[in-house]
Length: 161
Image (cartoon, rainbow, N blue to C red):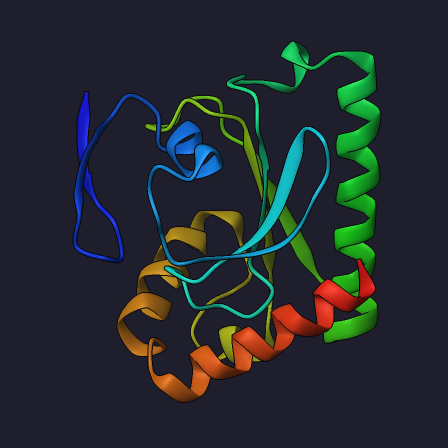
């Protein structure tokens, strides 16, 4: 069991953060863009980077190899739609996909991590820099203006996907 505090300040004891989010037990700073029968597509506001999307399974699985053929097809379709929308709607031309099976959540999720021009001022665009960029965004980009911009982007993505 792990303790987590949601955006309302309520403490929860959970086994899996992914399951807690998908069931609605825990409210975190996430903007749901769309969902399918087996997956949700969300903008993670905790890390305030426009277009930083997460595809999460609704079912408690840890890996792609645990998906049924139908789930895999559904996942691939959602991934393609999300990636296409990042390009066409938000103009994001470079994305790194990250899926770790060795995480604290132990619940399948895939990050679509966008590379923005502002990142080039400090970083080289390497996968090893993603956590540093996330920490920077949380510390330096959590202001109302940036969060409003991200929420506007989410609305645009909802209309497209």
